[in-house]
Image (tube, rainbow over all chains, first blue to last red; front, side, top):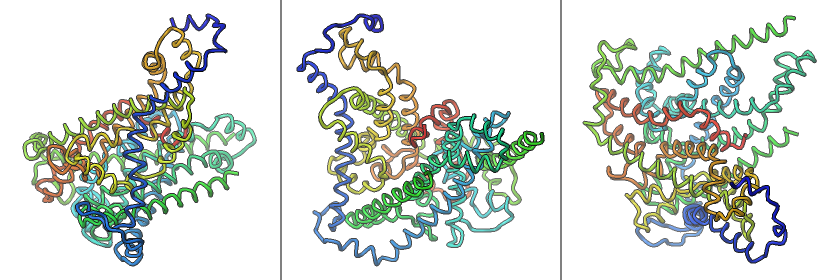
Length: 299
Length: 279
């Protein structure tokens, strides 16, 4: 019915009266209200308040007490915070550099209609669909001194109860969990490259390496840039495996866990807010830097 | 003439390598599933035994009889479904508003929404917690559901999708006398149900994985979701005798999202790639 009336020319349509149009747009604005209210209350307001709270000593039960930049000053000299920052960097780099590399290589291998490639994709994707805590519970067994990893590698490491290896146990698990996520993104990127480009280069006699160097790599740069930004953010968001598997012990206390303990175990809400402000600035800066680096190479 | 053949050979080799890698990847899951079905005396045996001497099917009920696992599962389902429905409704409505109406402040509001896409939510958890605490929503489903009721990514996605719906279609519905709500429900929604489904799946899986926020908000068994409950069970059961029960619990907790994922792979891939802005 609606489509039929489309055919009927409405001569008055161009000069439709203004008040009615304005009323309709006001109604249109109402559709955004539920989302915007939730946004303002549960995202914008807390965002602004985290900057405010970072200047206070605040324990949730007593009123906030203004302390200026004391929280930041404290953090600058707190070896625990320094360690948490460093351990986060080690975890993020250790996990996401191999995961991204592996995903890129696998995306090339699996970007085909060959029989079995669909099943293989599914196998690599499966860990993405499992929650971090469930993955951690499974890997506690895999990383047990008598577990799968030691027996497969012929090692006898106490993966989760030694400062030498706890971080690397988490990293191995992280690569297993996250590779599939980036594989999805790289495959989508590869599939958006027009096939004619490869046809043309083949006619020009380009080899496999040449095709990668001059077509795939430049065409994938935007995806690679998105992936690396996401990797940084995901790396710095890590929390569940460290809490579940080591409770931050043995050199695995990442920043999010540090914030959690500072705020909710030691009731130092102001100090935790200061960490949040620092993380916000750091991540924002890193993201801008990455986008800039990739934009320049893109040209 | 050797070009295409070597290329094919190269492709074959990489596929085989990818296959071996896939085996390593899936070995972890196979190990978890088989170990979950071993009698307690056979878990963590040296040398490694893949198959149990007898399958201990009774392990499957251990989480239900020994822990409040069923309650956690139910809580996760209630929260996951509610958050997903809320997101689909609020994001679709806001997307419609941003895409098809003109009013003062619209672009500013949309830009603010977009800007928050870059902020990891963990950063605002301290003030968010104190807000929810003062609302009296600690240990309540409201505290788990309402703050997660909309998402910047969802609004962005639905605005893009609805922007592609022809204006003529919407005009025609109006000329037929349909109100804006009717137009949205009976004209726009059927056209964008693909992106809506991708969004729903993405939000549900994200919520199923959510750990930190429910850990802060839900400390009692009545409201604990699966990640919080699983972590608590794990902390209480570190001995190797509890290995089969914990593995059963973890695998059952993984089942809904894994099944959804296997059934709706394409939708999920759509959701992930759209969230990254690749397509």
